[in-house]
Image (cartoon, rainbow, N blue to C red; front, side, top):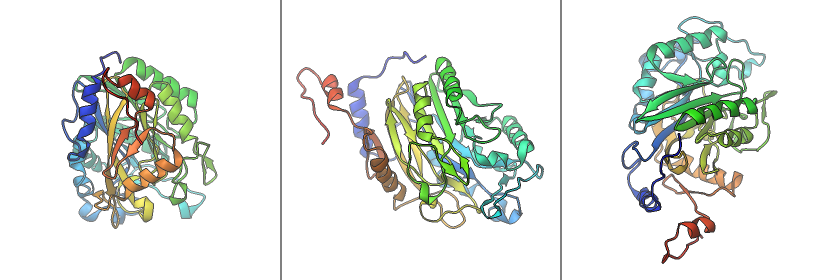
Length: 375
């Protein structure tokens, strides 16, 4: 399904030189490939343990309104649903450590806010999908299906396939938690992604893994433990699913932003942080800034370019454009530290661009065109 002719080198050069233009220039998608907007955790307010944790006037629309134009400007838009829809039902989880216990149950009508903002795909693979047990998982999936919202990440539904702009797009999601497609079953994840690669034009993978908080902003390339629980090796996972056929891999879980990496000409975002939440979230310091990343993929699924839209959450929460662009500088810093070998340039405007090696430039140079090196 990926044999479509890749567009010419000249077109790539012209396309990349447009990076000084306005945010998200051009069309959201075309026969040349697709664009994907990816964000992290979404929890628009919880009615448990009290309705006082819902946004003012029980209105969730303002929490996404400022970012809505960006969310709508893509072939497909995906995010992580951090919590459940369970009406007034379900049994709240009991925590051994009550000081580190957060339980999220959004009112069912809050799904309308998410759909109105432009989301096409939701990952349910995270630790909060179990906040109201099996009943919470069932009620959430039932509501999403009734509303026509595509999702993935449960052990009973690890993937979904949608069609956009004439393309079949596979979406799978994984986490190391009960009831979810198991991130730590690396071989099983590879089999799911390989199957999607065989039947789809593009494959997008979300994961929820790694330790949480400001002390865990770095990708260790090893298993990560948090509160006595192994949350997996997200570096191994991301590389494995790309080897199996994933075209874009995006993560959440640490509640802070992490580095990006280019592996086999596929983009990995190791954590997209807290995108739009209300109350019950620590939004201090690095927890309160996050990226919205738009990625352009070529017809064969390879990386063309991406752009970071800097987001922050003031007060109790809600996504806002950050005029200080803090998350751009943070991701740029973390990428240099954690993946100094990766062939990516991140500009101060948030563009994520591929760096060609000397071999690539020699290969792509015309007969009278000298090969150039990025200094």
